[in-house]
Length: 196
Image (cartoon, rainbow, N blue to C red; front, side, top):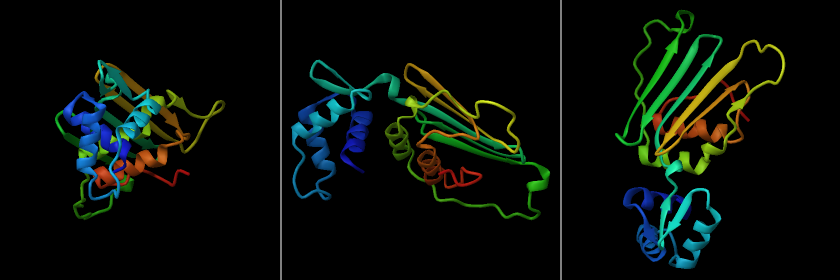
């Protein structure tokens, strides 16, 4: 975990803190990973550069309420009858993953699969680091009919705002990282093809 993600993790867990307290927490967590301690000026620099994510009030730093994920729903479907849906509730620390396949895609006698699951807190940090709230509301072809299409929808609920993003055969710049985060967290593929 880098310093930026460590700050997010600390503020998410402990709430608003002063820069010296954040610095102390970061150094306590990263003591084995760094040869030199982090200085308060370094923390201040990160917080200043990331004004879209952090708020400073009365000497304390917090995560902007409109950027704190409460839940996320990700839906991916295609014309071939395969659909994926992931619902994550960050408050209850729970998730559901659904996979639907039309009859023609089902394999007979398919054995149940077990997957290694990732951390819901790490997934939350990755979602915040991807800055999904900066994505456009729609990605898709401008003109014409698209055959063999893949549709996707992301709904991100935060403390005080809901963001909805959709697309048809076009994806945000960080789509690959987003899908990889889901795959690492849920232990299942969240793609139909390679998105480069």
